Image (cartoon, rainbow, N blue to C red):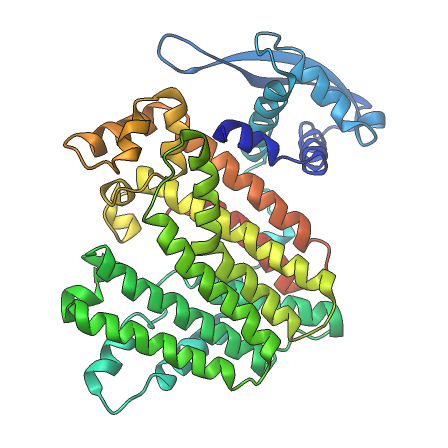
Length: 439
């Protein structure tokens, strides 16, 4: 499947309309009935230096009809650029640049209500207690096993998974019962999932021969591969034991699905499709299973503990899926634009591991020679350097960010359907944090 075409297909009419309404509502702060604006839009072509060629289209926007037919104005903008033959291509290009301008056009003192809520501060006590409880659960008569097992449970990482899970549980509880108090069973699920995720990181460090994790020496460097593997197994086993104590077969089934997907995703990452057209589909499936499934199924699990309402469970699942995929997409592009100090791990690390992520797959559209490097997992001298440079010279990073934005839009759309609360606002704000993070 063509990755650029897949990018376009993810954009829905509802999201387009919402974006346009936001754009047109902010292009002017005066009260006149009709306002003029100049919109800078790429026509998809490039100059000799491979920079986007921009055209300017001055349009009249009537506030009277703006809210009724936003797509009419989109059509006007799209049709200003006949050099882009396909209408869907023009539409996609137009929307992407409107989104960029919308973000740039907000006044410096503009502060939406949801920006006031810091998601991490809102559940800071819950997160602190969570890691303390995990360390307590991992206590054992073998001091070194306990030391290795608890090494990553200091709260120094991104903590994005327990953060999302706790916020989702509280938001759903408020939606259903008018109280955001966390159920003990929901907190236990957040505990278990963070343990399973961290155990997978311990195993990852061994598989990848990693040197650092979260800005400090990785477990395998300090204690060696064998002890690290056993420690990872111990953490997973303790997490599974805690889960069974909740005595709920449906809950166990939901969480087990996430664990199965995690293993499948790891195996998928070790391979690559020979057919170039199938690589992007393979990448997205791997991304869901390895990263997003753990978040989406856990969001569903904590919602299940609050209600049997299937629609709410599916909404929670979809939010987790969309945010999880967006998180990984941003993670993949940061591998090309952030320093080792910012990431807490080496830059270009994925390429060095032989992995073709979204920026590389997008770049292969402009530099087809990368496909041979993908097939051989960048193992020949100069492959990593060439692919890295090709990504920077292409639209790979920009297209990856756009794709992440589309998944974020889906997450925002689905979580906006539940009752307003500080936790729901935090989930909305978290979308922006994930999209714009630098590490």
